[in-house]
Length: 426
Image (cartoon, rainbow, N blue to C red; front, top):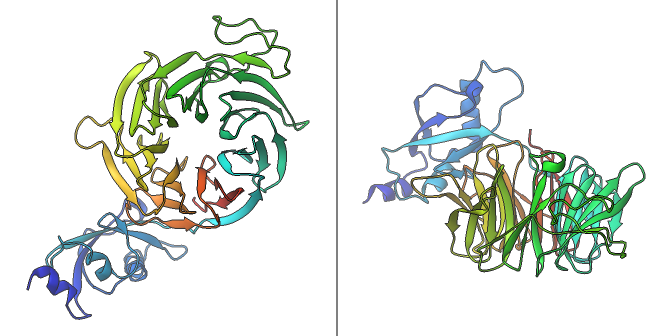
């Protein structure tokens, strides 16, 4: 009988050899091999570690357990049975990581149509809606403003700073707004024109202040365009002839034209992410992610997938890029990798198109994904098949997610709802 079969058919008192490891330096244990029953689960492993960490004072310690690239759910024997490379002699390495409480639903805010985009800044939430409006909310669910500024569905929203934000629309325009917190009033200061089809995504480079701030947009016209992030008033002289034009008497503010246009994608540009100053990634329905050198105005490198990409998110902490696509998975890329595979991991759990991904801003291993399967999932990037938690509540496909504020996760969907969850991540 093969060694594998012996393990699966063995008696309940079958034991496995394990080693415990962690990157939590203050909670590490000796590098020793332990024999544990095959029926042990995460609770039993927690008890084992707690016994080895008697010197650690305070509350009882609980961990998540990673085994062979997956979170341990259930008994160790059930987990190992999925693998063909484990024998009775194998020493299984189990890594324990900090366990967080599950995210808690906070508010659900109803809109008049699909919620296509969401952006959180401190205590404020921007949403873009298919009823052509931009909406401003508080994290407590209080509607602050409704801004009917477009003639088509709003597809993307983003904050420039705490008083200015942008919205991109199916009407081919990008509007820039100045919000006055004291009077709770908003002024549509600039309208950015240049795209020839629906504008699908916006990414702000937050490294610059004032006149150095820029943002990029991606469109169904297959192009990426770069715009100045400084609001331009009617009395200001156009810079370089392309930044602003005198407003026509429509009350819509100053019309802006792009600083730069990048062509190369063969289908719609669906996602954008800045990789640092001067480097921009664009994801497309043409199955590629292109990385541009914005200073040179040219293509730096290209990542090729096997399905249309819908969303990307870059982490400044671990310098990797998440991408969601029509194959129902999330891929983790190292855009700077010069050797080996650019794809570092593939996360598979959703059963519908993955519409959105978003890294946690202050945790290098955590991210969320949103899908047409009506679920938002929280992941640890060290576990490829098993998410940490499922955030339920949407009754239709989820179209967008945002984790810009560490304490809160926001999502919007075709059920016309904005949902906000307390992340419970410390």
